[in-house]
Length: 262
Length: 80
Image: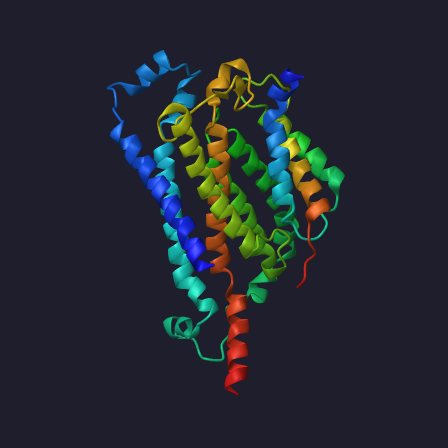
């Protein structure tokens, strides 16, 4: 199993690395790049030109930064799912103290509970809207994903372990992988069609990639890039929040380990 | 037909995204009518995306509808 996994990881690293090198070898930047872009490569407005098409590499880097941040929070807090004695040493807490249970701060005031549930639904919907409008409005995948994650965090803060909006670990893992892989694959597809990594193509065999009004038909793959970035960011931020709020699991582990010791 | 798809494509994507998110809501979402009315009011003030000649933001409404559908079809129960 692990050898297959290693093979897949190695192949994907190879494809990613080779495509980056290939695109770097062919890269040449013109001075006044926005003017060239607007004159020769029809874009409806500056927002569309600036927001994502030229920033795709930048967003790729941002996503990697987020992955590293989540991994660090997993190393620091996720480790406590298995061995939590060091946490008590860090916080100078007595061995029997269980003040960091999720149930205690899960029991929030009725006012916050009353507002948090509908707010989380409406915030998730607003996040979806922000993700989908990334190519023509200020916003995009990162902001929309953060909005959805904040809906999750709001729900977790108000309801604790009984949160109505619950992204389980498997779901977050899948979304993180799907987002990152989708982004890289869209980049590779751009390379096959246009010759450049993350090239924005607008149609395949005459069929528009993103059906849109004539003025913004050049959106191409930008909305899809926004969607996968949105999935990735919502998974990343929610994982960080989940890890920070999983003390309930820690306490369960403590009690189980104490029972074993007894 | 194509014009309808062009105009409402973001709304279709929002519905699918909403179903994905709605499936992660545990327990049934109640007071559906109030959510829909609230979504319509918010969508009216949000307005449609630029270049889309629509009176309200149908993407927002369909995202809320998607969340409700996803919750009703694939939502789970709260165990604890």
